[in-house]
Length: 437
Image (cartoon, rainbow, N blue to C red; front, side):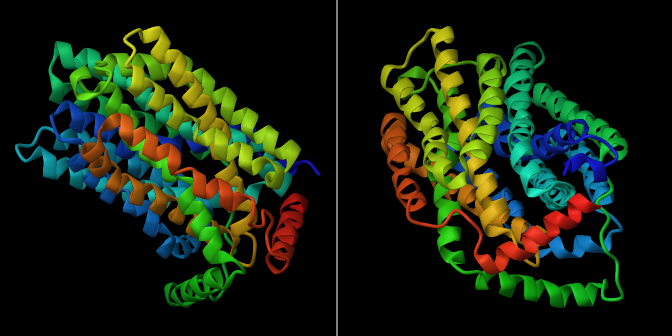
């Protein structure tokens, strides 16, 4: 049955804007903040400690995810937190003007993170409940594409602008302008999505109270950890990001590091130009191809190829660190290979969480738990990445991250890639209900 019959609009009208709004504030914290701090002279280990700790908001979001059911629909929560996220990004821009700018900007970025993490819960829930399993697989590449389009807007166009403004008006005004632009875009997305999104109404009953939800939360937690093979799934999710998380933290810093210190010595604008051109195209193609590839082959047969693809960036950065090329076209070509592999492979983790871990009585909440665990993997490896890089240098660091991909590749071949039977049945029933709506 067509996924779109129960939606007011075709998913192509709202999946891109929904996941772009999910990606922009996430990468504002994960990448833009790091580039800003790098421009202001903060060392790699210190900036990764702070941005990593702020990222814990995405780890703990499942603890308040059930309380969002008090809203009449997931659309209200999504739009509300997109607007709030825009306001918080504006506050980051203002914080940079304070004499105590570092503490103030970290505090405001923490607010961005909490707002964005809360938005993510309703965002993913809206996606899951509005599409059948087939539709989820078909649009999985789109979700990855537009989520990470936030990355390539921030690391492409925004860094290009930041680099130009750093030269003309100075570092602080440059980054104030960039966070102001992010704020305006988030507010615009909130306005658009108030029109475009399906309602995804929550079922309100007599038990929909804060105290009842608190009791349910405990049940959700217990049921999550009672899932067959859940500890192996948790290990798989964390290890999936072992190499990618460290490259995501250190790779952009490596591009800007002075050549005598092992980096490539690119300017802020050059990093933006490289990521914002061929890198963006390669990533979009990779993400959409990864979704259709997995839909065609099935997760079990596709997963090893997806893991190899998502760790392709590790090889690319090692080659760049070993040869330290200066030709910007060559660097751009290498990074386009990185972006294609990252986009293609990340689909595997999304679908593993969506179709193996989440199914069951509390599908949306358990998917939020899974994404929280995914973020925990990112945070854990990001927290140590700066210390490891400082200790062993860039070239040996990228060898280390290549080795980090081996455990998850092995694990993927010995664990199930389908939901346990007890959990699959409610998921199928939910899918039938959704498509019949």
